[in-house]
Length: 329
Picture 1 (tube, rainbow, N blue to C red):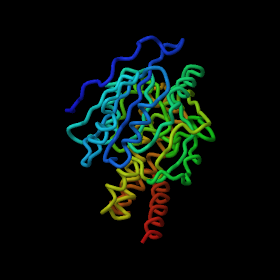
Picture 2 (tube, rainbow, N blue to C red):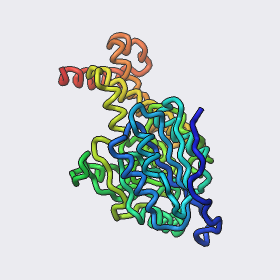
Picture 3 (tube, helix red, strand yellow):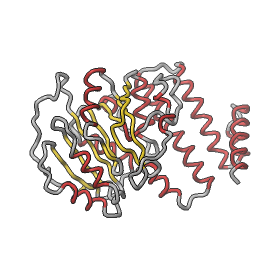
Picture 4 (cartoon, one colour):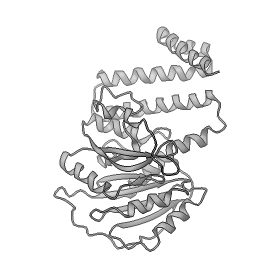
């Protein structure tokens, strides 16, 4: 259930923004970002583009995030169609994304998060790329800022898509692109379905789907200010990990990797890859390795016993994870 507020502006001109006829939805996903969300909201309302759909959705924040959203949007009379809503219970990031995808009407969905600041030209720049190269995923550069809005260093450019988007080479990557700077064509959901695992990251899944289709595009200019180290995914991890031991945190990472590889295997099958394809084999090996490493936390002896069919792989996983455990004591 969700608390929905009525639209606060007149509907946009429904004429196609370009010859392609693509329509655009800009979504703001927020959760416990009271200190930053007003800036994020004002930035999306200030998009200097053709009329678009803007959906601002709060995932049942426990602080004043939703009140800040209401204040920032009060009296809006701009060209964009604005819809504000709040979940009555917290769904989590993945379920929240799935929910909003079902609610939006655009062919292209541009996500914004409650602590990042989109440049006024972000939608315009992204739409140009979607309408010229026919990609399914577009991502851009960004300016990393800290919690005070000051520029800071970021390693996001080390992610694989800044080097290659080859589906085989990046099949097991856990860093594809800066998720906050991405935009998705609805085909990535319509063809492959929703995100099925609650502990994955959207960029890990949608990036792989777009790589399978060989339809990834990059805009080499910063189109948003990105909160480095305090964004929504970092915040959720920090909240979960406040009382976690190192072993508990490691198990969650391995669980996330297993879920990611499982979703990618499902998506590779949907794409039509045969079971003996190199991508399928690579993902199976990666998932098996992660499962063996995860099983180490249930006891090394039990893990080895359960993997007698793969003794050398099990020993290698046990040795690597055991060394990791020792180093972190």
